[in-house]
Image (cartoon, rainbow, N blue to C red; front, side, top):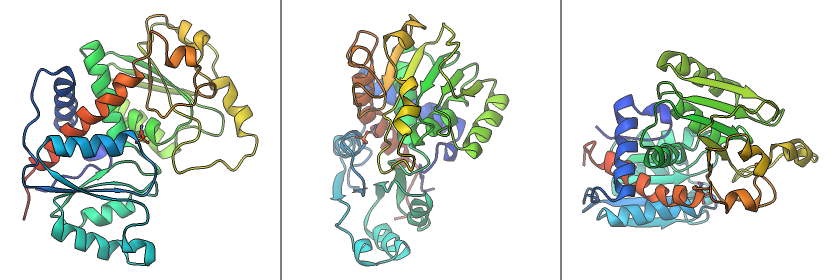
Length: 310
Ligand code: CP
């Protein structure tokens, strides 16, 4: 059966854990990459800017023995009016796998996936960034040696990275996700509801507050993302004032002295995080970035071993 990763919710528990474990062993160097993509062609279609995700999937596909075709925002006839459905039909006849960042709704990716023969991986849509969450869990597993029981404080906009993290972490028993989002920029209500329901089923906890008061200690990870998510802008001209109290600085980190700092990057020092935190001893953000490649390889192997109709 052709496998797709468009939402974290597409993964079974076994798939989720297997991808994270595999990414962690590739990251730690305790296992070698397979040749799962030998003889396969991977389309890398990025309509929005990317440094990490695009490089991770390109480098990962090549390391797994695959070949890639890269498309930028202006390369396809979609730009001149060809439909998504026709584009997907053509892609599915020629590609084994498509990794795409549209920063729009996931419906376009679902249309590509509808042709069956080609696996589709979401490299970020407006509502969810699932491969980032897999990287994040991989990084936590490598660092702590476990996921169960971890306590994560996420500070910043309830964006696609936060959504994917919430949908993934609440499937891990005994974890806690403390969301601190600026007022008016919380996790979308539907995703928060889904993550809360999930947390109840799996024995995890998720809370959201719109302030930075009462920061409990004992947190294992403090996580933030940049204030201007790729491919989005804010209608309120005064949004920076709303975000300012949510900067992760030494004082926020000091509230949880044992915590490591994570950031999906790119970072804007002096905005969502101070240089002293991002470049300080608690930061594992650049190891996390490197793990995007190991996690991408785990995702690509998972897709490639799902079988194909070709
Ligand atoms: N974190 C992340 O998705 O980085 P890029 O936008 O550079 O791919």
